[in-house]
Length: 527
Image (cartoon, rainbow, N blue to C red; front, side, top):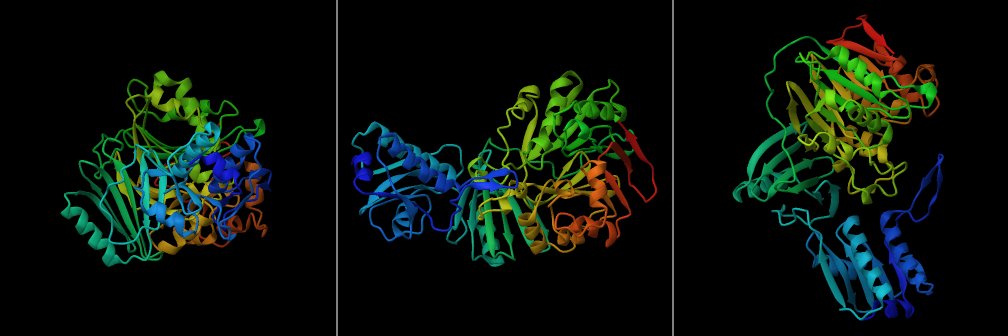
């Protein structure tokens, strides 16, 4: 078979009906097409390079001579995909149709690249080609259900989604894992949303059942590709009180973002996100931490950096702080769950390539990285962390707003609880409200997306906070507190005038409270 000659002879390139295939300007940013559409367009472009104009269409067009790209609804795609392992990809000529696919966007793109190589070279090739992507744990025991979706979760993790599941199916799956020699690491039950983490010589399996969805998710990772957090509090020497600090940004100089750190009893810190780096705000990190550190040598010991998502205004400032003060800083671990490039290709405001983020392992070679999953509970020092939402929960839906990949976590510290929402938006809010009622309760909350177009009122009703931290400037905060019923601010108005929040703290300037915090307690401000 000559791929170029085949397509040249009257073929069209087809992708799945219903995908977003129109790129447009949205809110000052560019909305792209869904990733499978991009893959189809790449084949069209490759044919154009050889001066052949090739039509592009959807899979329900009724034409026989099609190159079926990605997970189309056609029987030929199902036939070929069913013959592949979860890490395999490739192409096959089935009847008159050339199927080009993998189980997820990452491998589909690799399959397309293989076809493009054959188009460019113009050589005769077999009618079927199958390749394998290394780095995923794919031969894991599965539930006795038909898999509905496979996704690349980044950092060597793979997600399998099984719809039409029951609690009995989940319990049977757990028995199967244990019967095949897997060891239970931890389990949890949050209002009937049950989860468990298992390990074996082959790798890790984190699985959870969501009653509202009637679905089981299974997240896997090969042995050696993950770390497991502490399940018990780690005894520490109490050297002082606990504090929460919200970092102010140089808003007048064009900087912005979200950056927090918690001072633990032993004087070490937990950093959550970090803010943007358009100004020298990294020095605010340094000054505030230097004032609160209790290390005898003056070392700033960061027990953990919790990263909600990879947007520049949540990461860059802390990275620069680490770079500029490397000799005075010790970073022990990062906790995150960051979406893969392919998964967020058509997400509004996707993150730019984070070259600066890649510096962290170079600066701290002994640092550990923990991938957190929904349902996990663990400890950093003696601070308990509960994970209520991660990017794992967004799938199988395509991510169209990157903010909805934000991890939502709650930390118990100093006799109170603090929930960080990152930039979570409507999709995350829907999941949180569908799954939880009282479990989200927290004393303090970081208001989502700087107070703009973030979580819904249902999320804040369930959190029911008494203190709100607003990662935004005073000028923006005044609008948010004005009582406006504009669609961007009606959630802010509810927080200010319809709930029992007694303290609102904007991030202008840097402000610190001692935990536990009560109404009227001192709020320390520093530039």
